[in-house]
Image (tube, rainbow, N blue to C red; front, top):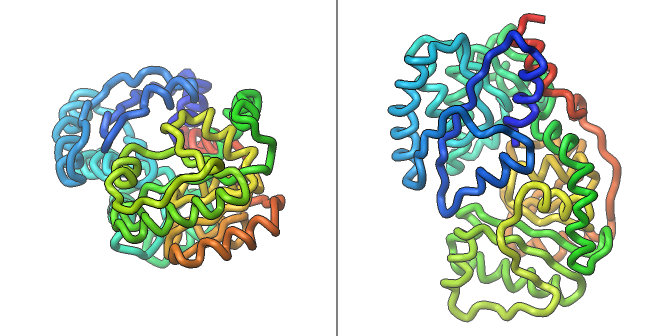
Length: 345
């Protein structure tokens, strides 16, 4: 999702040659092809085919394969995105080969070292020569860590570029209408983090809570295969009712269509905190912290720090309803600003 707007912006600069490298890493399934198609991204020039494995294995294999590619290609700069294992792997290899690194979505901090993404973010930012930040708090984080201001560029949120580009198609898709639902009539759920799905008691309580919400209004829950396997393993699993629907994983356009028309989103995802804030959809994030505090202070997001808080939080958020929010430089033009900065304008 983060690659699409930059690819489009780079293509407008005919003097800029760029190579797309895709790691092909996944845990239980790989929806890469769906995302490439939904967002209009061409097939990658190189697919590393890393596949599943432990985080250390994925990082190690990615580094070994990237070293040969970067040595052969001799790029002027390596642009890395976000906070996944391949982000860290590419930054490490480029730094070792003395190739400048630019990090898109730099400076986000949860300050929770139990999150693998936090380690990836912090190390990548220390290696990066240019740090493109999505929000002002990210600038503050980097400055507090001793990163020189000259290396920091506040450009806005690249995820919103993808959303703005895809939103007309998503609205036309009518994903809720095809399921017999109108705008604002349902709750949309995504849960995948180990803290929520790997502990049977926590997952059982969450499923019981969702079934309770489903007694009052429709609940749509596209289930990641990893989460599905944990649900299937539950003993004394709470019974689903007619309004709680467990769906198969969805592509980006279909999912965005459901997010845009939801009355409430319950999630533990980082991206959905951002998308719901842009769209004005109430969001409950089932996590003790967030690396995106701007979605709380200026957006529509609220943290639910324990599963036991969820029923009351749902009632409160549903009553509050949608509200407009506007976050600085979340305007769909972040890719253009990044390319302008890279080209020295």
